[in-house]
View 1 (cartoon, helix red, strand yellow):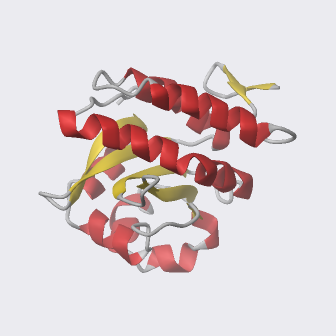
View 2: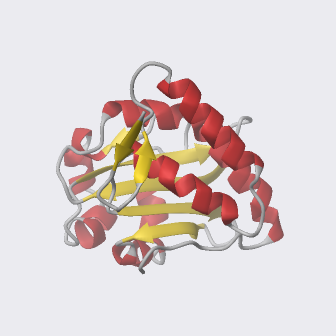
Length: 194
């Protein structure tokens, strides 16, 4: 099944019968091609957009030396995310939300009271107009924390629970791809109009 999106293209729909298997197969193929060129990130982007019709996407790898998340993929209205992740606040907020441990992606509209207590959300993201999205810590198969992924939207309650379930199913695939390219230095940043 293919759904037309507002960004001028067609997106595969991973919701419904067989959606998880299709999504996993597509992410597996993309992650297998992960290399330092960043092409795999460009291929991953439409798959993420099929989960949440987001206004900003950000994927970064954790750098143990600086204690910060460094961008690998930035797409959409990412300036508030750039400011957030350039500060010390982002890593602390991610730790406070327990994204460093294995778990399901969190839906913004389900944790709004917690988000309101975070400096990053109240200083950077809420003032930029974001109302919902999902976030997930990227953990490899052997449970090493290697990165963070967030998809944000200006629309309230726009991130469906099934998107979190699908992303949970492929978290180790994406994390292993991030981990593979990280030792070779920056894998590159992709962006759309920013």
